[in-house]
Amino acid sequence: MLTGLNDNELISKVLSGDQQAYAGLVNRYQNYVFTLALRFTKNREDAEEVSQDIFIKAYRALADFRGASKFSTWLYTIVNTTCITFLRKKRLEVHSLDNEKVFEVADNQDSGMRANMVEQKSRLAMVNNAIKLLSTDDAEVITLFYKGEQTLEEIAQILGIEANTVKVRLHRARTRLKEKMETHFAQEVKDL
Amino acid sequence: MNKDEMNSPFGAGDEQRLWDYIDGFSSPNEKTVIEQLLDGKSEWKAKYQELLEIQQLLESSELEAPSMRFTKNVMEEIAKLHIAPATKNYINKRIIWGIAGFFITLIVGFLVYGFAQVDWTVQGDSKLPVDFTKVDLSKMFNNDWVNAFMMINVILGLFLLDRFLANKRKKFTEES
Image 1 (tube, each protein chain N blue to C red):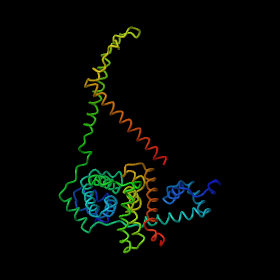
Image 2 (cartoon, each protein chain N blue to C red):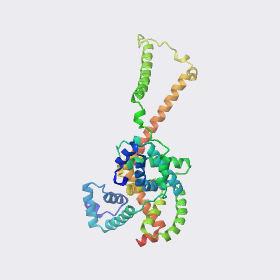
Image 3 (cartoon, one colour):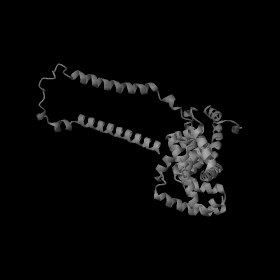
Image 4 (spheres, helix red, strand yellow):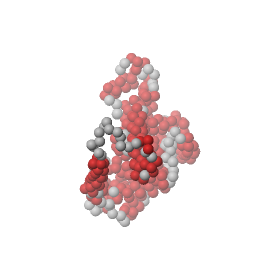
């Protein structure tokens, strides 16, 4: 019944006291939120915990959503701030690709992923695994643009930067993704 | 499109132009130019196909899914909670204006008091009432008020430096 309603209708129901209507929003966005959280945390347990925290925060602050933007844009802003706070708390470095350490991490992750790739020899698994090798910033902007259904302006709003900067970041992220695919998945790229 | 562009090799900036074309961000003029380049230059066409392949891969990439119990867990957690009232309902604008008014009045008051202390009757060509050679600056700079004033100036200086660096960063990002 809830699936037929759009985001704003679901929000109105929740705000008028129908708490169960929130399940419709959680079902609709859980994969998007979880994928974005996973780009930051790099492990599923933490991503699940953070995603849960994000939906709880969004619920508590739902009265502040005024419909000026899409609900997803508002929700992804919470994802971005919560994930950054989580990383700070865990004292993890938000890696930059210019940092040599990232290459070490990428190589370590790559060895684990290669075993996985034998099982999932699909093009899609290869792209997902290549995205995991990117820095948090690059993976986030690619995910928001391609999977989060957000425009450059909306991504700019989520990240708190200029739309032109998002465009530059997106271009760099795709270039780096291409490099990653060529370096770590050369055979799979050839087979495409 | 000029001849130089038709004869020049594929450069690093051209990849960004192709991405803009694929994403639909190119202007109508730029779109026409790129279509001509794609028709006339095999190098451009090959690169376009390569980028298009990446684009399609990214568009068809899959989202990760959390555990099956995810929605249930969230709903169990929020069952214990209430939605917080909207911020605009409990932040009274009159309080914010009141605080702003207090500080503005304070500043205006200090200025009025300062100007009221000035002896406007003193002529410009007369001798100065103070002998600057006998002024002991160390006494003035030991004063708590002066220290506080200096501290405020330092903070304002840092604030201006931050604005200046932020502007430079913005310009650099736009250029890049």
